[in-house]
Image (cartoon, rainbow, N blue to C red; front, side):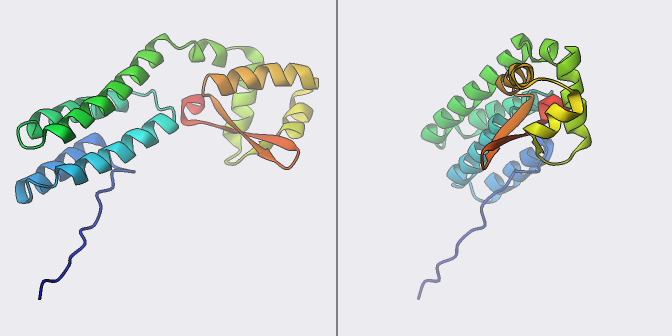
Length: 174
């Protein structure tokens, strides 16, 4: 009787590109047919990078890793290689956006910088009314500032009942 064995999914969630590169190299050396597992793990990682709006130097390393894996598997799995091309294209767009984004300029504005500093001190979401009180701003002025910060990926917004709450993103904290 054949025993069905379910392989553990690859997870690069907290991995750095070099560790992922080694894991992929090892997996493909022992199981050359694992290209779809590799693709799935990289797709989850790219998704998390995009959702987190990561614009740091590490994203370039992930982009290079995607290209390296694509070249390595192209002859054995052209479909997975083409999918990796699409993932690399997404990261390239993020890199391009990071180079042209006015987020840094928005973050240096005095009120915006103060909001980012307040949110950085808290490790959770801060209610809108608390920000208004701490900054001494009127509602409309605060709305204008936080809208710019959200649009540029410097803070996240969520609804909590009838009140908005805000939290700094990795980009806003850098």
